Length: 125
Image 1 (cartoon, helix red, strand yellow):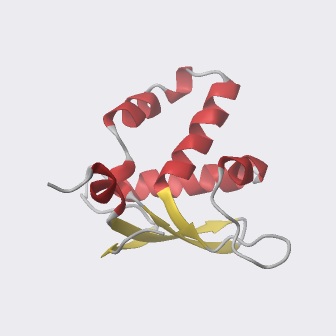
Image 2 (cartoon, rainbow, N blue to C red):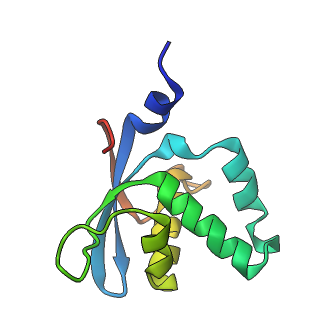
């Protein structure tokens, strides 16, 4: 029987999004969205601003396996709660919005959103 972490981290989807004119490439774990996280997402509008920020940071850290966001020295920025909190709100909103739009198809067409993505089965780092 596979370990839970293997079920969560094995499948990774690539996605690219536009953040204020810059293309950001991410790989995220679609199976990392648990029922609890989804229920919280459904009640997101009822959360306080501080709770929304904490939830957004937790979601990004849980879902994003890799990205091409660089630090000031030009090295890949580690995906940590501290670093995600330091990103502009517009970046965090775009990251989470692209992931959610990519994960949940448009109901009328059954196709994914305008975020470009492709699945790959790899072990996340």
